[in-house]
Length: 220
Image 1 (cartoon, helix red, strand yellow):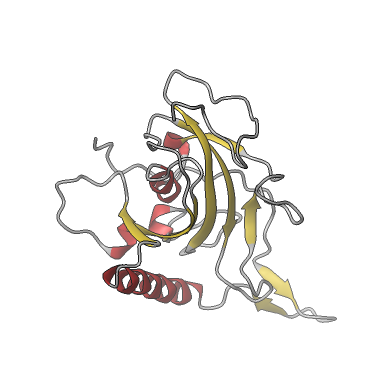
Image 2: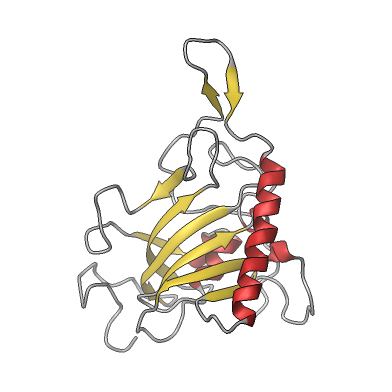
C-alpha cells in the first residue's frame, strides 16, 4: 500500500549531545568536527550502493537493497538516495515482517561516519551500551509509522531475530539540514535487531527471554 512520501519524522531516542566543533588543545582555535561533510557522505553513499550491487550480482545473499517503502510501486526507477542498503549479520527464525501500522521492539545502535574526534563514527544513540551483549542489552519499543523512512523501511523487511547493519542516506533520515545532534547530509549506519512486533490494536508482549532472543510467541 502506498502511504505517500512523508516528512522526515524521528529516529529512536537521541541519548547523547554532539559537539559540532572540537577544541584544539590550549588554544582558542577550533577545528571542524565534520569537514567537507556533504561530499564525504555523498561519496560514501555512492560507494556503499556500488559495493552492495556488486556483491548481489555475485550471488551474495548477505547484501540487500530496499527501496523506500513510501514510494509508489508503480515507479520504475528512483535515485539511489531513495534506497537503503543492508548487510545481514544474523538471520532470525521468525516468520512474517512488521507492517507500517505495527509496533516493533528492537535493539539498535546509530552511528555517523568517522569525523575529526570520532575515528569510528559518533554513536548518537544505542541500546547496546559498552559492556552489554545481545542477551543483556536493553530494548526500545516504537510504532513503525513514527520512525524516519530509512529505519521504517528496514524493520518492515525484517523477521524476528534478524540482526542487520543498515545504511541509510540522509534523504531517508534527517535530510540536508540535519538536527541539533546530527549534521545535514549524514549517512546513518544502524545495527538493528528485531526483537518482537505486534499488529495494530495489540500490545507488544512482556519482555522475556526465549532461545537467546525475544519474540511475540510460537505463532510468529
